[in-house]
Amino acid sequence: MRKPIVIIGGMGPQASARLHTLILQHSRTQHSGEGHEYPFIVHFSLPVRDFISSDIHKQAAIEQMLALGPQIALLDPASIMLACNTAHLLTDDVPYLQGKNFVSLLKTVARRLHDDGIKTVGLLASPTTIKTKLYERYLTEEGVIAVTPPARSLSIVEDAIRNVITMKQDTSDAAALTKIADALVGDGAQAILLGCTELPLVFDKSTATVPVYDCLDMYAHAVTRR
View 1: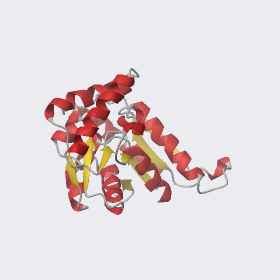
View 2: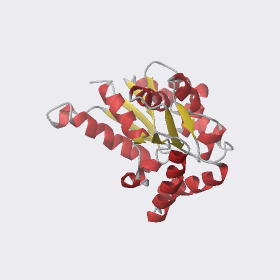
View 3: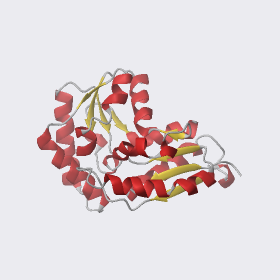
View 4: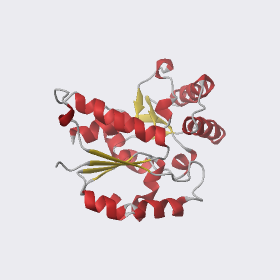
């Protein structure tokens, strides 16, 4: 049996389910479409209490992730994916997220922006991702500058993310995100990065005046090629 792609998701579950689907869609372009040609995927959807705007539940999340360790070791995966940008804050505390088979969403996105010649990107992400400058390390390594929303806008982004998780998003969320994205373009962003896995499920790309990068789609594409 082939080694699996392991998806660690559930933060929130709608986003990691979409990642699973995107992997299938990208793999479809590489084979004839027979069922046995799709990748072997094991998807863990963890009911982790969120740390979208605070790290108060971080330790509990670490413990849930550590509990998966024995199962993941038995699977001997080809690739491990973490279907949440903010959850990359946990990688230093979880050994199996430090090996060669772990594919970092953040590194994948930063490299893609570099390869596309993006020098300045408007970053839409959870308040925790923004406040901890989680993306900046990887973007800086690739020569990309991040432009982020002002503090007063982060609660609007947070509300949109939470509405996706609770399945309550509507057109008002999309309109609010478009307004924030337009402001980032006004601040010099050449492109918009949807740096939270829920945002592609609510952001209206048709309203954008610059390229919009979907972190999950880039992630699925990279792992499928890998």
